Length: 210
Image (cartoon, rainbow, N blue to C red; front, side, top):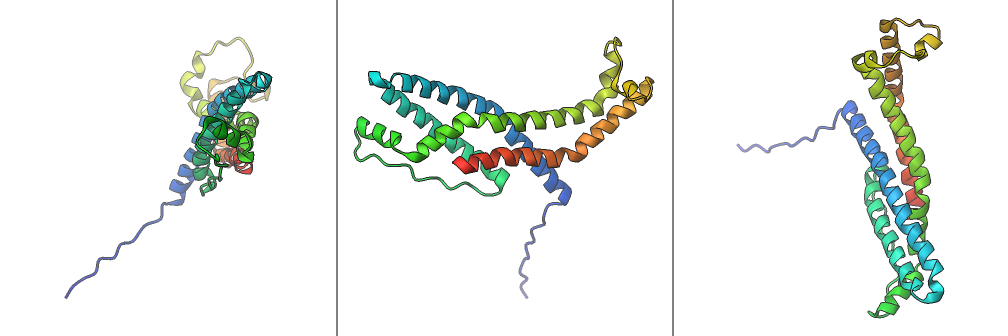
């Protein structure tokens, strides 16, 4: 008698899935801000210089090069968005050059609507990235600093009034430790939802333009 092996694939536990989603969203947002800053600087500078020099002819290839750079940032962002949205963004069909000559390739890039959409995304993405980064960084700071306050809070100079004392909870060290631990718990409880919102905000902005 022969036996047929049965392979079962176990689904990850909800806690594991939630942690994986939190890590994915956090990584996307925190790495998105420096990438957005680089894309903004490179593309806006290239566009401004190219537009200013277009009458001197040299601006035309500079604009084409800027659009190609924006296309590279767009390709990278489509790959980054996939884990956040749960599906990959379809690659657009860029306008092909009618010949292999350099002027034809430049004209194809400059006449391609998607290339200009890529440039628009590269320049404007800094706004949603800044909002998302600020929110996620604040929440993670609240979790980590509140949870570890008892380890380093004693070393802070006592030259002012702590927040618990301002709230009328007293100035005893144990009370302050419990207060900041409660703050950390509050931030931790809302962290998954906040990071999901921030990552979705940034990812949907990319999806709309790319």
